[in-house]
Length: 246
Image (cartoon, rainbow, N blue to C red; front, side, top):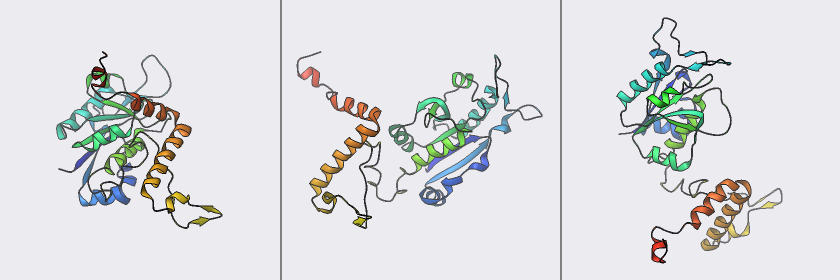
């Protein structure tokens, strides 16, 4: 079965958008993954097809109603019972490559796109919905975040990137930023490709790439570097017991 993506949205016309082009688009046309959009407004129960209401306690903006969202989520779950449901929201857990890989290895995903002031919190109490954020900034809605999430997953599907090893050395796959990349011409405006990359010495090249990745991560993303160093410092399972400590 191909990876199946279902998007719950007020703007289904935004899909596939960029996912219909390049590698993701080709994979979609070839059947490596499928895309279905569900109009949240179809689950409204009043004659105005209302999906939102004013915030309880007052305040600006509108909030997506839990009853309408729950009906849309239930509909998607009936069609894809094994797929996790993710809500794109700045209040969610930051998306990382490990979570992307776990999603890509599954049967698919249902993505709930927010709008306005966000979701009635009770949707997360009444339904199993994982809250996910793609960064510390605000978008007009969850659709752009859903495109990011799906693109990250689709590129990992078998055959989408071509060689299976294509994505293994990229940023975040090893907990580090990727090392700098170069290509021809060797000399450009007086700037040359580092000599080590032209040496043909694979051991030296590997060492340079590793050192560059560590240096760039330490300088540009100290948060990643701290997590990476913390992971390296942890002893392997059982090591403490072998040393006679508890």
